[in-house]
Image (tube, rainbow, N blue to C red; front, side, top):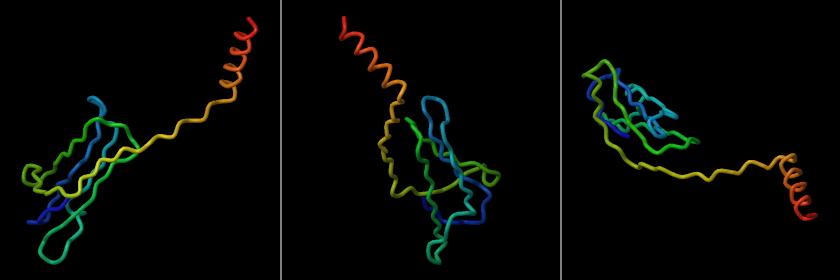
Length: 107
């Protein structure tokens, strides 16, 4: 994200990840934490949410200044799917399936 810093602001941006109607992750950044780009008053910041399943993203501006308004531009938006690693099968589960198969085969 990037913005022109018109004046110091106590407002913040919050990125929420939702699954259905439930917020499963969120992260916030204050406008005062945005990093300057050059000397023309342009500032930038990166926000990210990782390692959570979601079906909706919501970006919320809030704060005491200017009724919580934040003027930003979005650039390089990426939503990437990560592959999950299956959990190892427990030894008890393998033995139970093996015993079941042996029992079926003997009939």
